[in-house]
Amino acid sequence: MSISRIGETQAKPETTEALRGFLISIMPGIKSSQGCESVTLYQSQDDPTKFTMIEVWDSIESHQTSVKNIPPEMLAEIRPLLASAPSGGYFGLVTQKNKPRKERTITELCKITDRLFYEWHMLTISAQELQDITDKFLESVFIESGAIHSRALVKFLYSSNSMSDDAIAEDFFINAKLWTDARSPMPADLTYENFVKFANRQIAHIVYTDEDKHQWNFTAIAEALQPTLEKFIESIRQDQLGERWFSLLDSQVGTYWEKFKQLVNSKSG
Image 1: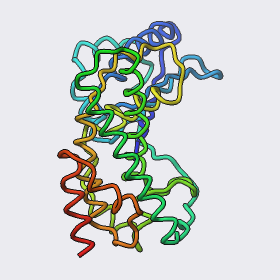
Image 2: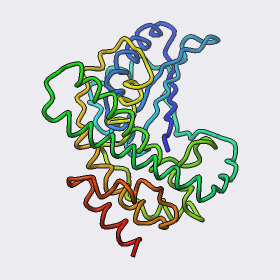
Image 3: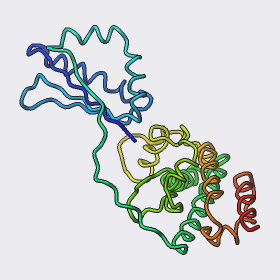
Image 4: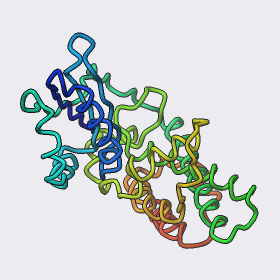
């Protein structure tokens, strides 16, 4: 879960503009730090000498690591601008208590695992096609496909307490902890900073930033997802597997499918 670091600083009346400029100047460096998801700066409307900076991080440890890397000369630059020592703390988002997830029928769960087969099939096809593709239009098609299907798999395998109509892996277990304990931690290739924010932009937004600068590697993304998806298939019951896992699996070839064949065959007995 993301954590917010809320820091407050106050300038002397004569250094207000200088402190404002300084805080704005350090924001790109904060944003580019490992683990930082966003950073925003606010100036009080009641007292313009007061500033609040809100940084969202993937963990407290990531923020503390970034602080250790602040150059001493930067600290020396801000001190004369301050009316008092800066203050701050870590805050978590307050949400309403989540309602229990609806228990799903076998028919519903089989429909979802059939969809998982499709998502994995489309992702692996996109990863394979992008290895040698030269046609720019087709390259864009497979990039869009890879982003859509890998994003769907990440959300399914790693989400908790999602919207009621969104299927998640935890729905297949009597106790959600059975799945969260069984799966491996999210690989670096699938984190918000390295994957999710780019996939969201690729799929859902028309933006001014140049998305072509992001170098997609769907082979690495598929390889990062594969162990967790294999663990999921291993952990669920045979009657929760949709028809595609029995009728279409044998026709799939390559390393992306070998372990799945073993797992499904072991369930069939």
